Structure formats: C-alpha cells, structure tokens
Amino acid sequence: MSDDRYGDLETLDLEYPVWDRCFTVAPLVLVGTIDPAGMPDLAPKHMALPLGWDNYFGFVCTPSHATFRNVERTRSFTVTYPRHTDVVATSLTAAPRCEDRKPIVGALERIIEGFGSNALIAGRIVAAHVDPAALRSSDRDDADILLEVPQLAYLYPGRFAVIDATQAFPFPTGMSY
Image (cartoon, rainbow, N blue to C red; front, top):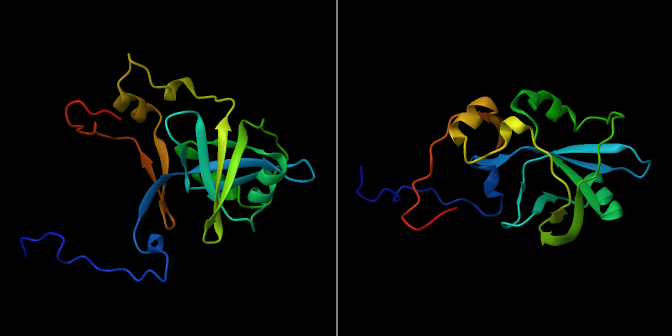
C-alpha cells in the first residue's frame, strides 16, 4: 500500500454526470405546488437545501416538470420533510395525485437557470411547522432527538437511509456551524 492515500483515485469521465457514479447524501423532501386546475401536486426531491443562514430554501428542478411550471405560475411552493416511516408514501407522490390540500408556505424569490437542463428554484420561507418531538432546544440533547424522531435521507442514486444515530462534529476551537 502506498503512503499516498489518494494515489489510487479514479478519474471520472465528465461527459457523464459524476452523481451517477458515487453516492451523495441529501434530505428527501416533498415539494408541493398547485396545478392549473387548482389541485395539489406533490413531487419528491432530493436536490434540496437551505440557502444560507436566513429563511430561504431551494431545490433543483427542470422546466419540463410540472413542479417547475406550477412554481413559475403561482410563485409559491411547500416543502415537507417526510418522516422515516413515510418512505413508500413519499415515493408514491410521484404517481397520479390525490385530492388533499396543503397550504402554500414558500414564496418564490427567483429561478436560476443554466445548470444543464435544470434550474435552481429559490424561495423565501413564509411559514414553518415542526413536530414538537423534532424541535431542537438547549435543554435536549440532539442525539436523543434523532433517536426519537429519525431523519430520512436520500442516497442518490436510488437508495435511502434512516438516520437515528449521529456524533457531534469535531469543530476546531473558535469555529462553529
């Protein structure tokens, strides 16, 4: 074995998306929109994230998807973090839609195109709700919260994980998240 622990890295062909060649971890969320007929339209998304430290959220979508067109038309969307026990129901949201309604909680800030066939949809959070058991507070240990309310993660491509055990990150002195 070589002393150079990175000496045997494989160079990937950038003609193909690198994301198909290794696992990446991301939250699995449901983005809710309203279709032109006024019906709810839910779509599972894993390229989704907070945008900075303020109340902004974004997700990647393509203009060929109804979710993109609905957000562009209504200027709003919802984001739901499904429970780890809801992975099958979350997957089924990509199927034809049901008739229950959700309030819109995201206000469109901007759509940034130019990521190949995709765009980043960025919104401002205008309302938020959380299961009290999942709410972080100074009098509860984060590890205990995750044991009680495990988080659902998507491992692209095609896998999921339930996160119920974690360790504190070893930040250097003076640095925080």
